Image (cartoon, rainbow over all chains, first blue to last red):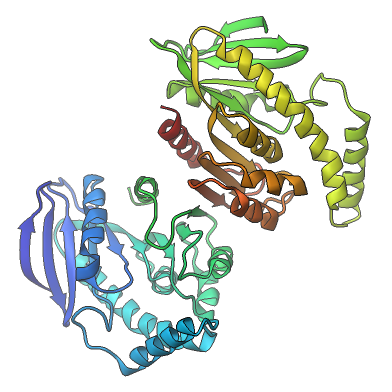
Length: 243
Length: 243
């Protein structure tokens, strides 16, 4: 892991950009901490620079609660090389949506599964590197989209102790099976009238998770309209489980 | 409104039992307040004495946040006279459940609608009396079951500014229509595996509410298993809307 830039934000949070095996990422750590801090992996739909304002906001909110946060670019997003398979699936998705057709499982599988296959090992490699840094201790939480990535990570990565999942993206059939393997506490966010999301699939996925403690928070307001008060609820969930 | 008893709980909260037109109720007010406080109407499934520990717990939690709370006995519950119609509907319900049959709309209507018809005007009369007391100002919130009563109250009583509704009881068909008339902020609690509740009906009712701000919190754990942290979430919702 190589740090490529470093700056202090106005609230004292240390923001460092890094790369690991050509994967770019950002690490935020609290202004000061007397002991190693828990870590939150920030998921997002791809495009770290496009998502930066929202990611930095979440990271600063978490830093105030004593957490470090980190994010990495998704395969095929931002400056990372595109994959032909994913680009083809994206084109097929756009065509189906434009034609008002239902988005078939086959397109969803081609669109999401290769992303999960590649992103999950990348997250795990980054997690190895982050936990080796001084000042970052764990436990580790995951927070954000893509829900198929978060589900796989929660199922296979034992260092992740709790997860906030955003039900706002297509769910491959395989993800429902993986959800049954998840046993950590979950906090699932659903935008009830999310134009690009299948509400019933999100409810079915919530039902499928094997976790004994799982909470669904559904709100109005479209894909990007998650109410501000959900930031506080998310912070409370992470504090309950990572402190 | 006549007060029939008065005592201070160990945290200083003043608990007063009252009757209004032969309806018994309980009023809890904070230990001290410099100005008139907002009021929360505490809904429940009937049987104030049976429910007392949980009601008092909610009231004390709210008093610590600066709210008064009040509850009244439901028609046909506790020491109030039984109605033949309700008793017959209850017997039919028990028979259907024992036989493993689906509970028909007709039984639900007979069971719940007369309760709504009688309870809602009673709540409104009690609200008149409570808001006339020194020290209680408003705004007013509703919190609890029966969801058909809470829905009707939220639809018809303009003094109620926000409501927490517990989706844990049968929903008459008419309630879905009334839900569309509700426009105040709502916080709806659903126990995902509630043995005595129809999950799909609860989701349909949540969908039907006309409110621009409505949040659904679904948790595991059966009808009485609402997690402790939901108490804090409820308090935050009420503070956001009634302060």
